[in-house]
Amino acid sequence: MTRIVCRQIAPRVGDLAANHERMLRTIAEATAAGADILVLPELASSGYVFASRTEVDTCAIPSRDPLIAAWSAAIQGPSVVVCGYAERGDDGAVYNSAVVLDSGGVLADYRKAHLWDREKLFFTPGTGRPPVVETRFGRIGVLICYDLEFPEYTRRIALDGADLIAVPTNWPHVRVPEGERPPEVVIAQAAARVNRVTIACCDRTGTERGQRWTEGTAIVDHNGWIVSAAGGSHVASAETDLIEGRDKAITPRNHLFADRRTDLY
Image (tube, rainbow, N blue to C red; front, side):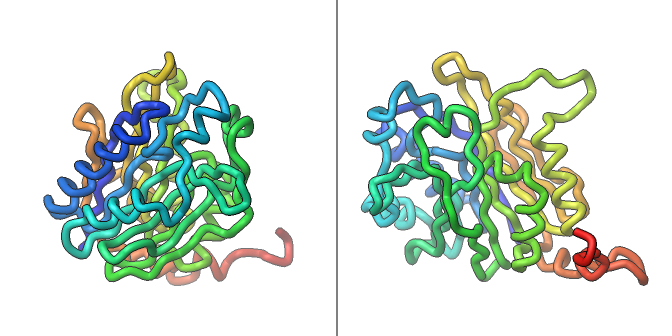
């Protein structure tokens, strides 16, 4: 069994130093407490509601920055951490990115492909496929927030072998009918079920320049059921068998991947 933990935190927009210290504490505490895989929010190092490109630039760091090395060094034991940050590329562009780390360093980087709303004012969309990283706990794939809403993308990462899709998010608050879950969580449940893959979505908390957040952090198992949600604790934690989801047979005569009609779509 693998213990997955998502920690909702409240970054300060534009305050790289304060966010860095918060991330160090969170990584050290969560991994020391037994998290095998820890997921932090989208743009955890920078905040989200930027006022200008200049503000984004002050928080953007290269993918091999010493700050990222420090996040890696904060990991206690063999844990794996996935967290979002603003990346300054070698091409001068700024990307909404996520990094996969263990105590030995960077395992993979990913640049968000589908930018949401005002993100298009500040970030350049990524052009590479999401990574699927082999770890001692299973194969971890990475998407960021709005990426999750494209079923072609979640299917692609599942076909590439992901056992877990880690999704750093910043979900803006929307009104939800009484008794319903946030729409992003419903999408995560559907994606998990139709691909038999575990999905861990880590949202953020706090109010930033008037923007409220869904605080919808949830861990969804490979059958599409929510096994943990953060709620008021700001922590979601669940133990799950990631390898079990590799069996895509759902009846003696049905297989989620083999039944696809690629001649029709």
